[in-house]
Length: 389
Image (tube, rainbow, N blue to C red; front, side, top):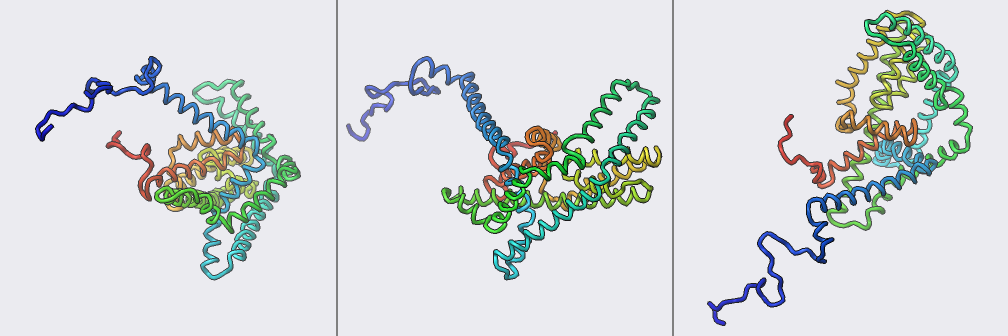
């Protein structure tokens, strides 16, 4: 053949199957392969993949719920380490040895947590029976007011709500008996010491541990691991520090308002406001309802409405002014996502899950936001078009 000689097209060579334009050969042949290649087949394949992922997540979730004595202390230690690690870094930059800086930060945190527990025991546990009685009496007083509303509320509905409130106030997770009982159990003591030991090593060797876990990765995968680690720890630490500041402001603001009005049990109510502030969305609402009920029975309906206004005002100030400044980009989650995370955490682990679910969800979302670059989210989370609604 010369330069202008006719050449056989590759698809026309002997032994090569010629396919019509636009079609591709299905390797493996057969009717089964054709079934899995059409639209329904692709949907089935994706469904099987999703079911496999869900099964893996369910297995990890099941194992985690069975190993709460280990998983929960480790998660709490991780959150606390993320919150206090800036202090360790500051002390190291000042020239302190790593071990000494770790001990100073750890002892500072233990002293702070001990002071909070002591305040809870002193202010809440010793007066819990009185606080519980005041809240239930306030609910009974509220019952007489709602009977005059333009819409009908049956006695059965009121009784059901009252029983639910009584069950919450008298539950095994709230009250002096619960706190005293939990503090005496071997599981609590074991979990506490596991948390302290893990927290110590997280503070001392946290970056080295993460580098060890990243050893299998190179290049852009290694850089991604470093970004995800930094984003996760930054989100967890920022959430805890910001929530603590917001909770303290809420407790002080609402406590001052209650003291001015003359509400009894100001200190235990303020402490409960501080503690419940760590549960997003519902915590502040529960604290406000409890304070209003106590005010209703102890002072009067007008003062109770003033307390409601104070709680709403403080929460509005927190949401519109304080949180954007203190939290920044730490908690950019839709309220519906927060609600789902709270529900899932509460169902799986109880009150501890309600506290930990939201920062963990926020950390996961932040990791997705830096998956492909410092300001480049993972492909599925990127905006593909103008999203105007």
